[in-house]
Image 1 (spheres, rainbow, N blue to C red):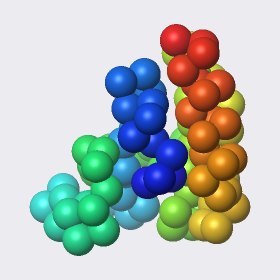
Image 2 (cartoon, one colour):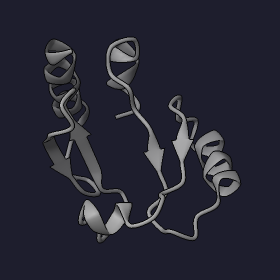
Image 3 (cartoon, one colour):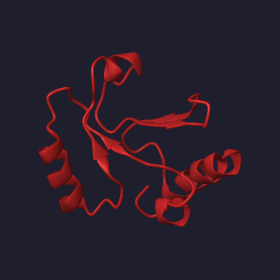
Length: 94
């Protein structure tokens, strides 16, 4: 994702969201900086993780402009080329 997103950063909004309701925003930001992720981070709120059926870390979910899930993957499921395609599809819908 880190390799593919910069080419779409002006068209596709990307957030890293904590995988635990106890993740602090400060801890997430520290991780973001350490891993050199260029996108912002957010802490999960309320029942968000349950509502989106996030059961393992590194779950990735893409939503189109209407809020419909168009892509879902977990740890190691997608290579940079697949991410380019996901971002291209999202950009073409916006």
